[in-house]
Image (tube, rainbow over all chains, first blue to last red; front, side):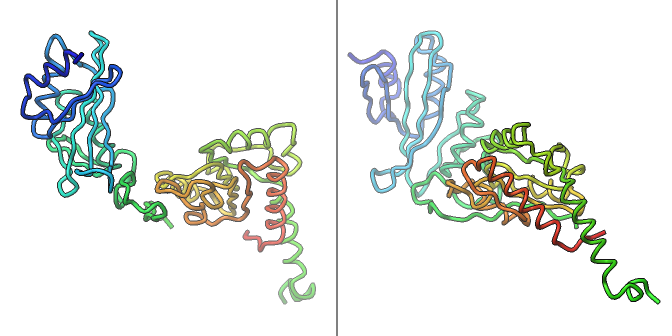
Length: 162
Length: 157
């Protein structure tokens, strides 16, 4: 039986939901990127759903395995209903950008920065999209599958006082 | 007539050098720059059981300005590199650097985007102590190697 969450989502965003599945109670919806902020707002603010907790935001690189290459994954939890849902958004290699949800959850600010840092996915409308774990001089995005495993990076050393 | 000539060449200077070397090698003030699991092994090696005080290295200082041996203990990430460099620059001469453990010697098991492949890419290293982590005996051997080096080097006054 299809869960209420996926049913509501499909009713409201008929054009944007690409597919859904619900394996052993794990609700997952694959959606298009155009409506991501509206979908998140709907999940958060609909009283029956109230997915008020963004647990995780990350990305996957399916280089050579799947088209389009990237997928951004959101995990939501409803503290009220004790329900989880997973939203996946495929992004093409040529233009890996998606709208930021940091206006809905403050935690998305840092999670999206990490996602940019590691996968090079740009979040439109993010207030401060800088690297968070690595340093400014770092070249490339290390969790992309085509990042060379033995690549050497320039050291970021301070100006010497001597 | 210069004092050196009166006493036959460089006799006085070389003796002073040796005396200074002897004094310096038994008066090591360590600054432990501890970042990872090797730190626990360093604590074990520096505690009473192995009696590191025999080598005059029993009193770690926790400010680089008060120390003359920089013990780099544990994995150094690329983001740690500028901090390590600055700490080294803050130490007064004469100063020495010991790389403690495989990670500081060569990056150890971490050949990846985040880890510095040996701290000798950042600061000059005098003694490398390999091991993951090094046994206390290896650490003591490393300190003795450092003492040997201090004894035999040209002493800056």
